[in-house]
Length: 118
Image 1 (tube, one colour):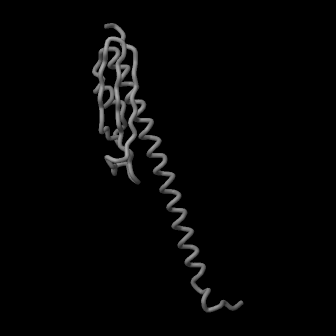
Image 2 (cartoon, one colour):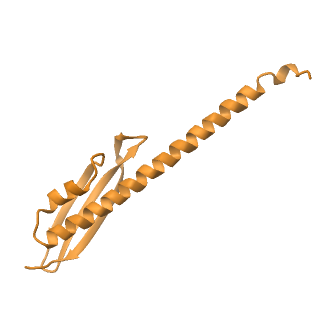
């Protein structure tokens, strides 16, 4: 079998393109997992913080304990009136690696619980 002169490097170019697409798809999947983990962490921290606030506990400490080590909280707010305790948490989404985040990419979650014992 003889190759034509113009087709000698075609297989190499196709391989490079294929490897690039596989790496890109893998990075997108990893980024999706990081986004889902950040959303889940924000939701759980807000819920646990609102529960602690409704019971008269230190809700900020509960939010800090609930967040995983890699999670950075940009916004942590809480307040209560006579009937409802509300907490809002915003967690930065890691970009590529858990140590790299952006302030522009984050998930916010808020939760409210009925106030007890007041």
